[in-house]
Amino acid sequence: VSGVKEIDLSGTPVTAKVTKALAKATSLEVVSLEATPITNSAVRDLTVLPLRDLNLSNTNLSDAGIGLTGRITTLSHLN
Image (tube, rainbow, N blue to C red; front, side):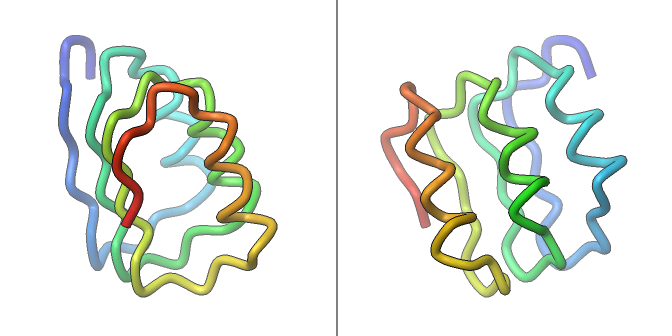
């Protein structure tokens, strides 16, 4: 996934294994995880990325999980 800047995994069965792999794709700037079974710990995995845009709509994340996105200092759009 080297060089990939955008990925849309909306509606897919995203697991912790997937988010750990995404965290290694350091060029990612836009990630859509709409309507996925993403967890709070999966969001924590993504905080190392230079994301500009993150879509977490229609997920079952808790307030704590959404709060983790505050660690992404490059984030300008959260849905």
